[in-house]
Image 1 (cartoon, rainbow, N blue to C red):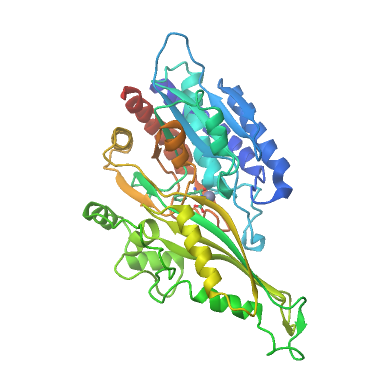
Image 2: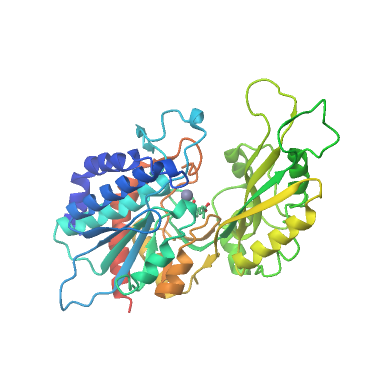
Length: 462
Ligand code: BES
Ligand code: ZN
């Protein structure tokens, strides 16, 4: 391993510069105006992968292209193959005025690299590429074959990736998938994530009068769509934080005693949790700790709310329409299609006759859970322990990576979630950053040790 570690050490500065180049692409998948940036970013990745001796190509889809990069196969050698999955698309950087420096101009301050996508997910998938580069460039034998799949639509639901997996099923045949797109509680607490929440997205719009009206002349005689929307939304969650939609909890699996014990091991108090998020008091479903709520209980969230006049000063109108973007987080054994039906049925029932309701259903993804007892999870735990010299924490996470279920259903492969994000990385928020220890020491050297251990541990699996 020494040549690999020396190589990583010698090339630290260049790796960081290359990561800066990677995060400069404004690869925002939610916005059509960035289609070209996504393509350019993917091409940059392909060029990079080729430079480090991977067999790489761009595979077009109905949306953004997928980067596929494989270690060169030697005839007659039968090594186990693993997929490394990541995404090069990022969330919109808004609100821009809250960024200390522009989101796509990387800024290094202390041990942090600030940029949209630095943690979620460019820094994390680039760390794996650096580790593999060190193996390939020093002629160190990898104990397994690897295929990197880095996609450009994760942040909008990975709609085109399942068809891609089906079409390339043979080529992507692998024992399991390794993903670094989650977090760890702290640099001292290596973690293996064994469950993710699922998701259902819907957009609601209420239309009232055919145009914005003078609120003094007409107000009081027509329903105000903004008010109607607030009243409708307010009925979707009760005061104890439970989703108030009939049928919503039907398929929710209770937490096991083992899981509750794992949650209790997390190194943060409720007071620290509250102060960290800057709220006066925590809120949440009764009977569950915040750590259980955020990772293992379902929720409804309003992601965006729009109506009426948003400019400076006042304007006296009854707005013609109001809209809201909602997401529901799902847990085992929720089925997104079933939940979507419950939601739409209930919205129709709640909507007053004084406004017109339109519901646009968006992306969805099933919750994911891999048994901590499975061979891959056990190999991951051993690798983490060897690399960090500490007992890793088993975690459930609240975020979603919708495609992991397709890995299981289409490729028959479970996913090992090995996150490098820290709680204060601010993914999806202004001033996102990636910790350089996670990237260089954790991400490259330690991750490389993790990778070295991981690939070694995985290489032994049948
Ligand atoms: N990296 C996240 C997922 C994540 C973050 C999982 C932290 C666990 C812990 C990923 O990029 C993400 O944000 N996914 C979206 C998916 C959605 C848009 C379909 C999410 O969870 O909101
Ligand atoms: Zn994300």
